[in-house]
Amino acid sequence: MSTAITKRQRLETLAEFLNNRRDSLMAIAAEGVDVRKVTRIALFEAAKNEKIAECTPNSMYLALAKACELNLVAGGVLHRCALVPRWSKAKRAMEASLIVEYTGLMELVRRSGEIANFVARVVHENEHFEHNFDLESGETLKHTPCYDGNPGEMRLAYAVCHFKDGQKQVEVMRRDQIERIRRASKYSDSGPWADHTEEMWRKTVIRRICKYLPLTPEAQKVFAHDINDEFGNTPLVADSIINAIAVDGPLEIEDKGLEPEPKESKAKGVVAKAKTNETQQALLQEQPT
Image 1 (cartoon, rainbow, N blue to C red):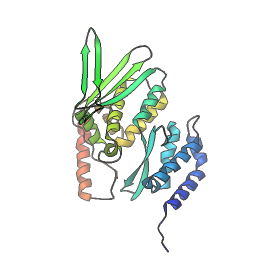
Image 2: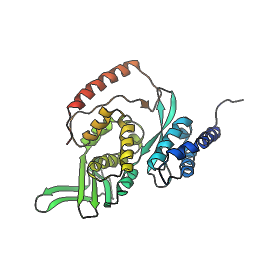
Image 3: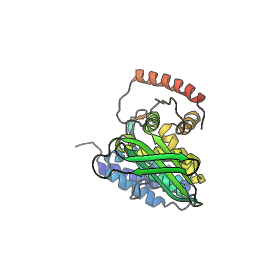
Image 4: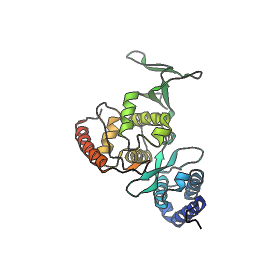
């Protein structure tokens, strides 16, 4: 008789685990959060995705606790955030992480009540794009997407926010700037950066423009979680990443605690630690714009 745990057994174990902790999720949840809906959608996502079903129940609980605290639903038709399975070298098991999608960040910005319209797009090599500054006519941006034929490689990402008082904020990022942020991510070669690259380009420029936008305390919590989850939760690293989104210069962070494959290397760890120490010294010299 096989001792392998079936997917159905994993789902039943997860459902029981989360049901036993529903009261604690309700205590953590922000006002108005439907905890039953959050857990129900999470179980549905686990039923669809074998890797999510393989995540430890405790990591699923922690991810959903953060979702409840931040008033977000992981999965579902709106796709504001997602449960992403990752291999933990430390625990030698699949663990779930709560990843906020770019649409979730945009929704949070709109909750301030001061935003009339908010868009973020990617520009490809074969598309017409103009971005100009003029003291008399002001700032102009023109983008003609390529809907027929090959649009080419991605080269820019931009975000435009229109305020209800008529003002607007525009941010444009080049490919080298975005790639610099990607390389600093703990998940630079896996997860959304590998599977949904264009969405991550949008998310990166949204993070940058949000430095200049009004954010509710709730939105500030989500952005802090998002930065810390992807780049690390130490103040030095988190603050430097936020500033680096708006400045140029060396930015390499190699301490990647979660990897897609269960491979370990002591030599790699020593090198990574040395690089991290050098990076932190460099980051201390960077000045925010």
